[in-house]
Length: 153
Image 1 (cartoon, rainbow, N blue to C red):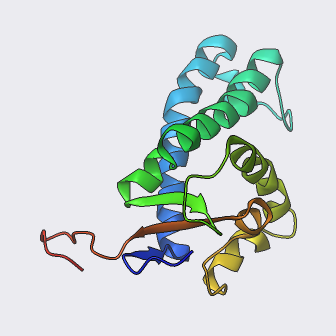
Image 2 (spheres, rainbow, N blue to C red; image 1 turned 90 degrees about the vertical axis):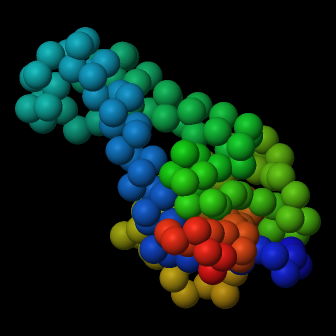
C-alpha cells in the first residue's frame, strides 16, 4: 500500500480505540445481562458463561457488531474517533468480508501468547498486529488530520 497521505496507526492510538470500543460494548451488553441474570451475574464464578443468553450477548453480539462495523465503515467506533480505518495491506482498498471475519477470529491467536500479537504493533514497521498479518490488512489514517486546536498535524 503506497499512499503518501496515509500513515500506519501505532500501538497507543490503537489501544485508545480499543478502550473506547470496550467501554461501548460494556455499556451495550451489561445492562441487558443484569436484566436477565440480576446482580448475581457480577458475582458469579462461572468462567465463561452463565447460560445461552450470556453466550449470545457476551460473545456472538460483539463479534457480529464488530464485523458489521468493519464491513460498513472499515472501522469500529473507537477507530472512527481516532480517524483510523482498516484497509487491505496490498491494495489500500476496503478488505473483503472474508478478510474481516478472518481478522476477527485471528484476534484469538493474537491473544494466546500473553497478547503478544497485539503488542507486535509497537515493533512492526507497518504497525500490523498478528491478526492484521493473517488477514492481510493494515490500520491507517490521514497524515493531515486535525489536532485538538483544529490545525493540521
